[in-house]
Image (cartoon, rainbow, N blue to C red; front, side, top):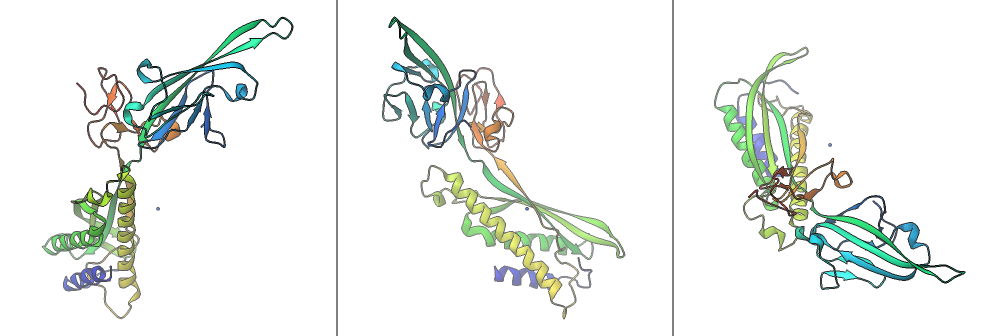
Length: 327
């Protein structure tokens, strides 16, 4: 980090001088009960176990039931039985292990029990139906859009381009060990009217910090939740870059023995915005998935996502979850 400060400082002092100064329905045990009135939406992180679904509503669970039976029907109207992935208990509780996109969809349970008249001992079968809809989701991939400003002596000349190239190289070196890099860099020179100082020239520099530099997959160590690692890396990259520009402000605004170079960082000009993207087959839909609005949720039937877009697109011929293309 110190080397980066020194390098940029040296470049700025080399350039022309004389300038101006300038952030559900789940109980305490993790059980999710059905509701007779409407389906219960549940969001399960990819490759994690689902919560425990209970084949009755909370009110009925507090009562005694006679001869209870439970029938679970999964996606594609298939009867569910116990397996390595599906766990169904004798009391009708369901859990799905290592959840995948293809396991998304409706899970319907029919709960049957006997109602016995105390006087006549007459039995009557009561049936209750509960519907749950489980959606696979994953965390969005983070990147950060950043913007900074530097003063310059003129909008014409080679020094502006030199500063731009040096700055990009410094930032790339600063975050390379995190397998992050700077992409889509750009700059434009503007005239800025400053109160009591007249017109000055400033470079408006923009770039994006992305966590997918060459070799990023190796950094995941075969983790199934690689976005957790890449998101943590790009967060560290963001913090390093923010600290770098904070140091620029400190260097130039706290050393009163030097005359400021014509090209220097404009204090408080650093801006950063997080940009989310979703993997193919996933997207965001706040209206449909309000309980998981920040999640990348598996695309539902009738939609698909072919790339790292943020939303799923419409395709009426798709009948499965997690589609990545439209036939």
